[in-house]
Image (cartoon, rainbow, N blue to C red; front, side):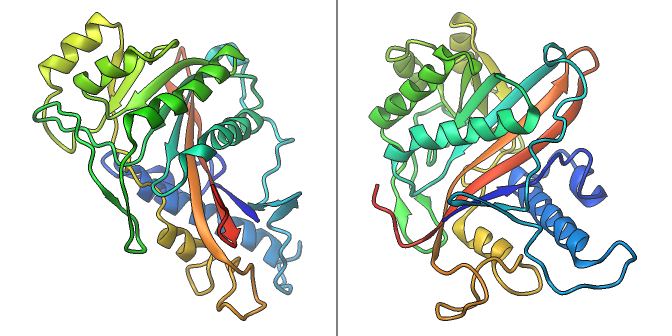
Length: 311
């Protein structure tokens, strides 16, 4: 079974603890707090009647659609953006997570983008930035550092090899050709990796988003190369592994801080049974161009529950 988690628009929901965090907070804090707040709000809205009296626990705050369970339920019929599409810059960042087979990425990219388009009621986005697992930007020497990423169950997955990056990019170029994406971008690419990568692209990235880890200046070599290739350099404070499996289990499991979606034990009948595997996370932001105001911002995440699926 697929579990689709959503935060809704965190600019209008979830309370001050979600939308007024300092800008230095990493996105995984924002994501987890926003998911938990949206789930709790949905549960509370179905836990009382119109006159305020308590009712029995109801699962109506979720919605089943074919083989997917939306947590909480998403009403795509509601109006997306307040103004005409042309008034917005819509940026989406897609996080491919550690340990997930590369062969799934084409389908995952389409799933993530389609959810954002439905949520915002638009036909296209302006910029898609992709984050590959295990690729870390080294601000000191601008090297092609590719480290091993540890996942929470103690196993290790080697970072993406170069061929896998190119293979994934082909599926993004296809979405570009379809008109669903106006520009493509990458994250954590130094000048050497970027130069090598451009040789294999038909639609080159227009953005390279890097994490400067609280300090440091952008290496001169990267500044010069990006200027030469007309690639914008942006900074961010996102986590590479933005939603580990352990965090997903805590969010959806039993207990005071969990949503009660997952069964408490392997033999219990009080929830969905099976191992959980977080597949991807997508972050979307819609900015009103002439005012520079973020009107809509949110996240979707997808997890699989059940027997291990072969790549």
